[in-house]
Image 1 (cartoon, one colour):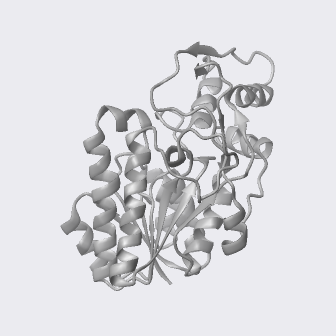
Image 2 (cartoon, rainbow, N blue to C red):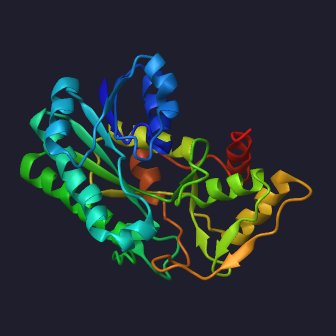
Image 3 (cartoon, rainbow, N blue to C red):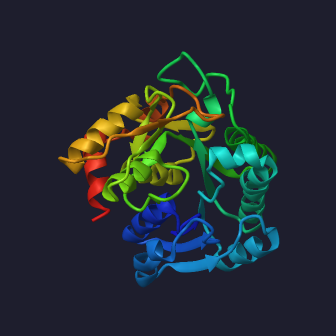
Length: 309
């Protein structure tokens, strides 16, 4: 199968590209390397993947890539994912996450792609809610421009399905973590905490640390993406573990992995746009994709921490 992965040099995208190559796909990786890394795709390129350094906001350039690759299935992972930046510059966030998604959909439509799988977000779209685990039927109330732009992109997927018959699906991810996540970035608290502990520095907790998230290991997530690409189910599907883990619990588990002398965390004020609790109902993923998370938080943290050796 001919597959194309936008954001394919990033944390999640590079793992997906490796898995697609492993099953024998002809893979094209699209990334502007603003966040992705060439080192993430070195193995994929050695295995025969094609790399195109292209910004999804450049519709004309993206169309040329699609025309050359002629993908059957498109996995759209390229995005602006920093909640803080989305609030500081919501127009930039929208240009990347909304306009960029429209460019991907247009290119897919014009080249006759069979399927588009979109990487959306769970907690950032639902916002603050007392309904936990949260099902896809709950009204969406984003608390940051990032969640709003992802919701808008989802609506464009549905529009292209109605107007052109393009087969689309949006997967609403929990908080994804695992090897290759940037420990020096602004997103990905587990990677950041691991990097701090490795460097002998104190992890910084914003707020009191009781806020929770649904943490999904990247290897499990890749399985959900591939299953979504192989089906024709539409709409939105949560991809989560149905388990809440607090920031304080993360620090405790990572300190145990670090061993004696683990630096104590420091605390800072809560940040605008961050929600208190997030946990996703994954029943629809089990029913339609036959998928469930298989990696416990303890094992996932061990694999993530060990990858920094």
